[in-house]
Amino acid sequence: MSLRDAILQKPMPQHIAIIMDGNRRWAERHGVARVEGHEQGYKAIHDIVDACDALGVKYLSIYAFSTENWSRSKDEVDALMQLFIDACKWEIEELHAKNVKVNFLGDFDALSATCRDEFCKTIEVTQHNTGITFNIAISYGSRWEIARAARLLAERVEKGEMRAEEIDENAISSCLQTAGMPDPDLLIRTSNELRISNFLLWQLAYAELYFTEVLWPDFTPEELYKAIDEYQHRQRRFGKRV
Image (tube, rainbow, N blue to C red):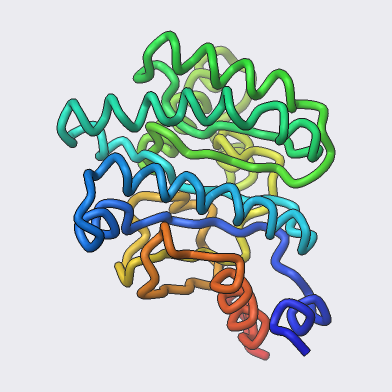
């Protein structure tokens, strides 16, 4: 029995989050420009979305560009933004045909008008699709997201729409960018970096963490199956004794 067939026999994670790390190191190892590493990373995304969808995963969230990534060189940032814009144009028809719902997480105010327009178009075209929900985090940082949620709740209290004592975990979750979605069951990080880098800090409270040495451009569906297989062999307690 193949690994894919084996994992299909067990409960599948409903929501998988991925920190895609290693594009620049991949480029260095292959002696090519950084932008080519990012382009190869983009190709890997395509295969992983398809694989997750085929497995029955309901939500896939990827960390494409963090708030900290704005500090990279202008040339690299510009190349990445253009790649995001082009990817939307290239993929929108296929994603829509495959019933994929695309959502973007992050600070849209920090993006160019061209980026915002292309992202909004992608959201609009796919918003009624009922297949896998594909969250792309761009210009995203979890501390920014939580601070934003706090401001939204403070405004509601100030307007008299709610009382301060009514602010609980559910209220905060409802103001996050993933409102209405289940928290990730499994977080995957590539390139052997052992941290979560300001990604979905609130939502990852009880996620299973999986780290691999594989660089993101080399992360194939088979590597995804390995991560899911390890997840399925773990006993999730959610803080409780079993």
